[in-house]
Image 1 (spheres, rainbow, N blue to C red):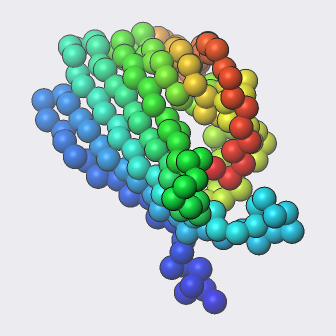
Image 2 (cartoon, rainbow, N blue to C red; image 1 turned 120 degrees about the vertical axis):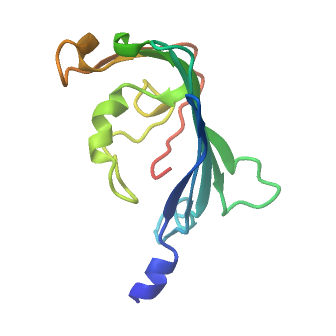
Image 3 (tube, rainbow, N blue to C red; image 1 turned 180 degrees about the horizontal axis):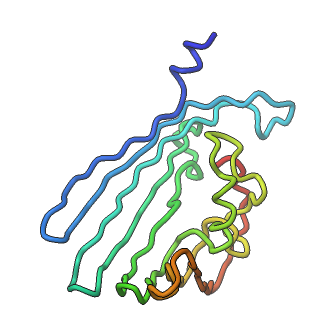
Length: 178
């Protein structure tokens, strides 16, 4: 019984594609074979998915670094005619200003997820305290402008903070388990 469970267990992998002269590009992905058994017809069945993503960084000068990330999700349970089986999970770009913090914009995690991430550690059903995407910056959301600072401008170790603004938000999808 244990061997079949291990055969379908999700695996996440990453590879450094390029790292030279202050420029870095990583490729990462995950494949998860997943089956739900539920009395709720909407939850019952195959929930398998694959994810692929890129993370990049470029050193512009001693104090300025550009960075970005893009991640895409593909559900394996949909038919070829179903267009709702894949979506962009993350897509943002930004600048780091040394000890003065960073600013990025795009589809990213809301600042409330900074706290929730401590509970989002299980392979499935993690982070159950907040389960809505695209709502009130709880998890992933579109149009997020985010400023982050670590160690309070280099003055107080461990004092990290973030400020975030969300522009027009037209979605409210429940992404429990996504």
